[in-house]
Image (cartoon, rainbow, N blue to C red; front, side, top):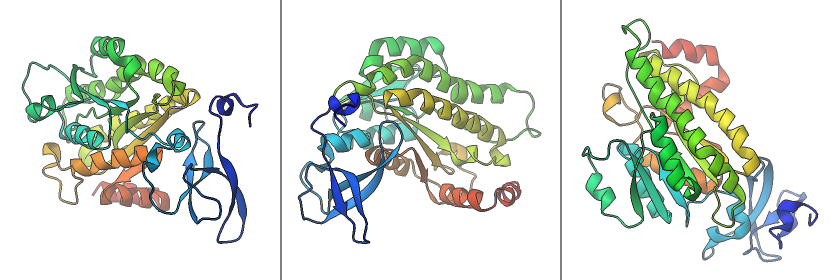
Length: 325
């Protein structure tokens, strides 16, 4: 192991043998609070290269347990880190800001398009320490490039909360203006963010303790299976999902993980006519923090998202037929 550059830079690195209750003995990474002979709890984590590894934790909580150096290498805990939330006008974005601050983020940059225009929740955002309002319109290439030139080297975690939800599929619309807006905001906005912030995020993947660690996308679960009632929106989300796979592959050499968080209909104005169950924005924000702390690459939030995940695995054609009812 000392011959490996990654581990040589991070020595001492704790590994050991763990006797499992079910019989086998395995080689595993060890949390600093593990004590020889004491019971431990095992989990599988993704390392910086995206490979699954075994990790041993103390059986119970210990003081500052999440601050262990090796554990932070396996996760993307927002504690002490600087985070960019790309759309602070949305309810999801504002809930994400609150959750990240509650999780110990050092600074949360909040992107606001047209900051001169008032919006709900503005006073709360501007009145908190550790929150900085920045001008950002993801659909505007110059806006993203200008902000990246200013704070790109400071962003440890990027939370892409850009959204543009409109009902309708293909035949009940006239023209392509709404579809263009969906593509501009969701798909092209994603590209603008990736091209502006991606290179700096990737280069800072090994930048000390509080390095760049994660990029989070909030996607509709209908990116996986089109929902005709919101068909064009579903298509734009599917395009973003495909793009996220490309981004994950390009950020992996820097040790930066991409977390895709899939949700069902959210309890916001554009899903007012959709019957429950719907996902509360606060639940999405809490899931973001949970996914970062767990070092995950995918999460499904809410009953609808989880059901679609299961049914897609069981019988995708049956799910397709049921969604068009």
